Image (tube, rainbow, N blue to C red; front, top):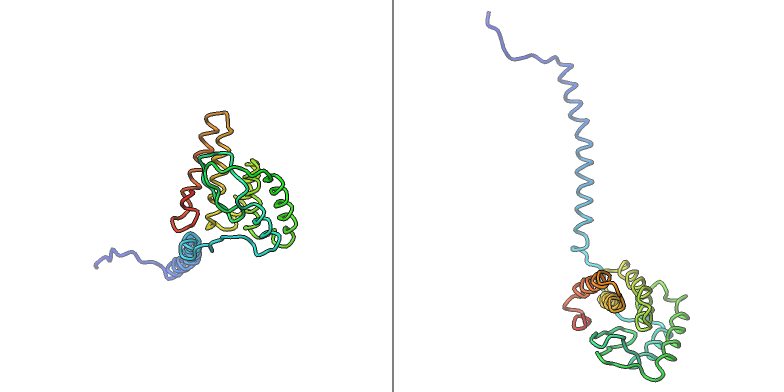
Length: 203
């Protein structure tokens, strides 16, 4: 009598194996679904870019603040070019006008008066940060520019402002390592300003 070497598996064992394979398919599909979600989240910014922010909120007090400042303020560093919706362009070597301090105070009050209406608009925060920048309040300017960029990464004016704030902060740092760190942070922000943005030349 011939002996069949093929092992025989009991029907109950076959059913158990099939049951386990089917049970494992569920977690595998769930894992694939989670990975697909992660991939979608990673690709979303490239597929749907963040809306570009620019300009000032359409508010009478904000626009009046800009009117008070344009052509009257400067930066503390002669070699930096800067431009914002609030101040307009500030060329290297620009100087404060005689009434610049009064104009800054007036503009700051106007922006604060507009806060209940447009304070949630990132453009209001950037306008406020610009006054902090001109008044040498660099940590406050950095915080406001960062908050605006958390709302929208596609905000060239905020990138330029943040880079300028870091560059000016570097000038007052006494420790070489702190100065270098601030300059590198400034350079990183300037590099993020796209060529198509009006702020690219300043960056």
